[in-house]
Length: 249
Image 1 (cartoon, rainbow, N blue to C red):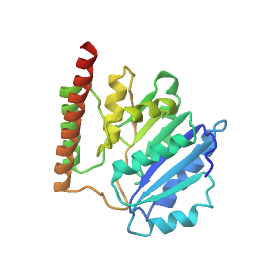
Image 2: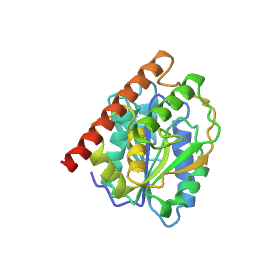
Image 3: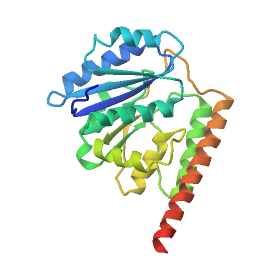
């Protein structure tokens, strides 16, 4: 498999999105082709063991849209799909990597808001101005935000947002230092970038209501996810402290 050097690689994890996946990929590809006139791009799609018709749809459209690079994996969760997508993206030696989800809740038209600020930071985040998610998901986001501030003394409004632009060489460095394979790697990457001294820009973007598909983490599982993320963040905080102490010694 050849991986030609590419200016931008978009990473999109997918799970059970048969109703909208072709529309999402087509809209992103059409917009980027029109907007990035002087930059090549690829869209890496990681199918996370979808159980509906998503895999067949992806295989059927693989040749229809030449910018697509489709990968199928066993179901491992959103975090695993994101990490595998990042690893594949880096094989293209991209200048920049952008990650967005496949649920059609974000607009391609907001991409320039981050792209046009890329000279100011290695790591740029969107910020959902108005978030259309269930109330319990919003509460967990606030809890994670508070945990991050208490453990790392950094404030991140939307640390796990799947709308982020990262310099390719910087992403490679972050992934090298990432502690294992956490459940929510995007949270860790945001914290690491902020602690590294980056101006992690929080740029307002549009978030739409979900019209198709099904949220993969619901009800009581959200609380379990929150505890797991808190435990992983706490463990990483202690590992950083130990590394700092070893340098002093």
